[in-house]
Image (cartoon, rainbow, N blue to C red; front, side, top):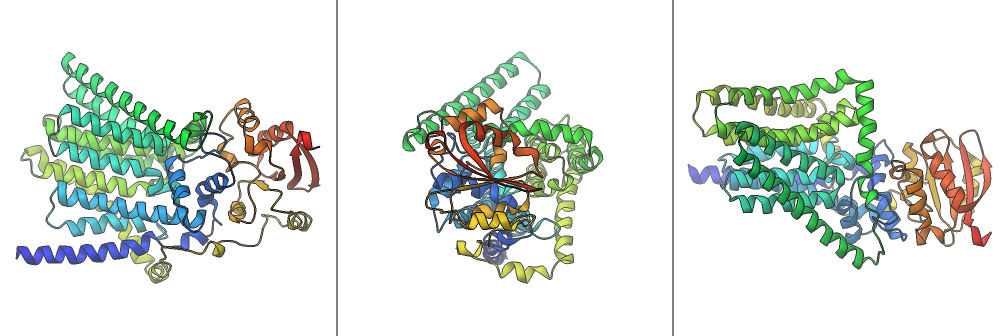
Length: 514
């Protein structure tokens, strides 16, 4: 009987990974209705690097450092394909993380069912079956360090590691999150800090305070030291005189804007899903306030849940909570299984409370599949490890067509000149065409989170920008880029070629050349 169960588990596991491979490397998201808008925030920095700009020097990156540098280094058939493969591999690694937790740490007998649920929630959880992964700004690419933290915390807690080993492991996790993306480091640091705070509140004494402070100080010091070493290696390898680390923290600056939007606009839409997640945690904590092991289990993974909820809260968009279902499912499941073998009166009730969110999340996902089942064959047919970048190239389009501007763009000699489009519309996909290089490092919106003085300093100290001539197409519908345009005009000699109701088209040279 045991052998039969093992064989069935292995068979279903292989089937799950086969389906996961196809869903992870699906290419339909490259051509979906947003015209590459979300994808552009990752592809544009890679295109900028390939045209001469450098991360942490003059190339902004809204969503991270390593998650842009790695696909650039991969360089598999162009930026689009490199990032496509990078993201697909991260999906598979994340599923392997769930596998390792279920099989090696929690030692679940029917682990294939657990991995199946997690994989489906990860890859097909949204209402249109796109899944969070097809929008990299909301998928595994953004939250990968959080999955690493979940794995490491589960590993530490279930192996009774020493304080020294705990500090070492969490320091490496925090270091990797700092290098991955500043936003990811916030989730990781908050999770660790909030958990240690819960430890202290559960056992308030001087000895515990000293222990918590020592662990916290050690983790931060080691992680910053390791990050500094890696950045110095990067700086020397890419021949960079000095790093502009402010570019790495661009998106954290935008959080205050999102916070203001939330308070002033759609509080009811945001708090309903947040309460759905936090209320079970709070109830379980109250039920287990006298059971130290259970309490700290809930506090550990609950801290991770609360940390990533800030993403939806600051984004001010209720639907963004859907992108966090895989993390919530994994955390609540681990809490459930860690508590399951402990015998206590509180556990019988709190286990049901903890299990409820996992059931609701899984039910929501499967109801989406049942409603949209006709899309499954089409989605599965788009599976491809390697794509032809030419498939994504389309004729240059404007949100509002202007034939005079299109004719001017057709005249550009791409061997001698370059073009940047200052817009926030769906036509950002225009910049994916590899026939021309970007005039400004992009996406330019990543620069707008900084002060004008800082932006001007970056541009003036950029060797590539100083020696590059090009064109700027400014979409006046969005006033986001007016300051950047003024800064460029201060540094370059810019000639207005066309001014229409919506667009301004400029040709810019170095001042010396004019």
